[in-house]
Length: 422
Image (cartoon, rainbow, N blue to C red):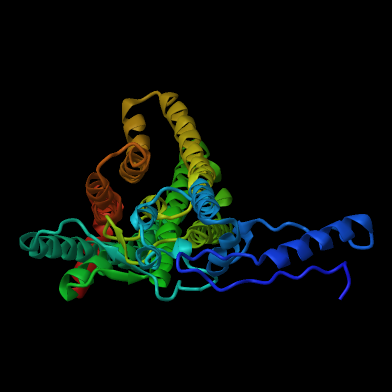
């Protein structure tokens, strides 16, 4: 056939898995190599590393080099995988199996090792909730159900009182009505799911359902923050520029500010949803929370989440830092204006209009920052769960009491509304 082509004749496979070459075939192969080096007609073939071949072909290729080289190549492949993958419980389980069948069985439970398969529809999360004690479930059910009903009824009562009284058709109470709607949505995102889980004894949530819950959670949370900023700006204009208040805070500007708040909140929620959707999770993930909390999801991901954590803190600094800066700036100007009022009665009257708003701001930002700043250093996820109840359920429930008990106009409007219905 010519000296330029060498043929390799394989003998039968020996029992130990090695493959021997026939001596005559070795001689022809050596002659073929000398002929190829003598003529530069063909370029040398590119050597492909063993790692680039599919896993099922590795034993055949490695068999030519003997048993020792096979073990060395396999250990090199495993070392490269450990360098590129984050250490995770599912990875540790996979590395403990010594037999190929055991390794395949362990790796089948982790999405990190699934080849070119889209299993997001089949992925589910198990929400562990507040407690695993069956005796505490009725107590938790009654507590969260009562808080949710108080939140919905209180916020609806404020909306009805403001809309039914023409004296309250001002920018401040317009923002208060939108804030009440945001509080209902914020509580509805997490609390009803937990109540349903206790009733049905099923704490499973799908991958898509988790992303939807996360999107609404960030949407209403960011909307609450922006509305509190708008209410602070409203108080700043009312106290510092009282004669120009109605001109500055006209209905067109108020509607535009609310619309921008909705759009910014939507952008914030979609950015967080996009980042979480890029992560890879193992099957049947147990989330130590009563809802899909993003910090907990980052801890349970199979990927390296250092970049995602940096992005989340960067987004929080923008979408949370700017509203807080606006609130601080507004109250610095408000306090400086109040201090210039000569009479003590005038100072108290001016500052009393900001008391309810300051209470709501302190409650919302105090609980929120307390949870998310302590979560990276906290060693007990259960403590984070209990603290999360404050800003997901307690804060929306207390807002109607804060704005009704500390506001005379709301009290009078509610009394008139109750007298009409009676």
